[in-house]
Length: 296
Image 1: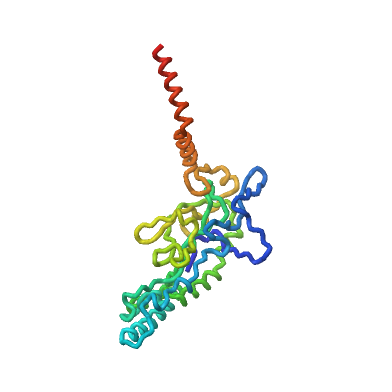
Image 2 (image 1 turned 90 degrees about the vertical axis):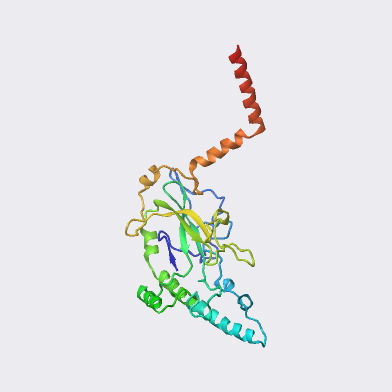
């Protein structure tokens, strides 16, 4: 599991009396400039300091869901053996590895989602960070991944390799270094990335608990859900692109914090005004007066 943007590190709230800023709280002012907190802000869907509420244990299919049931028939015995193979593959591969589990609903566990960093982009939009929580299968290196493919086995995308990937990312100092030495004035790029789990879900099918931020903005493209957000821009070497304070302030603020074009809200406000009955009456009267004046 890896992060698509290294601009900020995951922050945890270790103190019980820590103050969490309200979404409606006004941003602190520094001189003549208004800035938001550098901490990830809480959003209505519950994505905050600790990331997505997704739980792999709850997402794993139960024995009845894969056809395992108590019984003394031959089918029950066969399904029980297939159930053992299912959970073995779920831990190791995250995909069917033998003919025994072919056709069973095996997929890597985990969830991809965006999390708000609390930092503003130079164009005015909020900056987000993409969290790639679905195991990628490269925990033990590209060479082993190639060997597995040569043997006809799927990549190691199970729970166990996922734990190794988590440990590797936790020991990676790059996000911390970038956060410490970055200017705090990022240049951003817009990306569209898949969100949700490997089964194309963005919420727990049993409890309805949402796993991603702002689920109403997620679009189903036929292969699953995607979302579009502004994230830290990077150069050809993958290093974050940061600006000076003056460069950041001078950049045109062409987007609203929610990522929509800045003129959109003004256009919607105008269209809303033009559809009000009072506005229609006033415009009609003005047209009649103009017509009478022209006839004179």
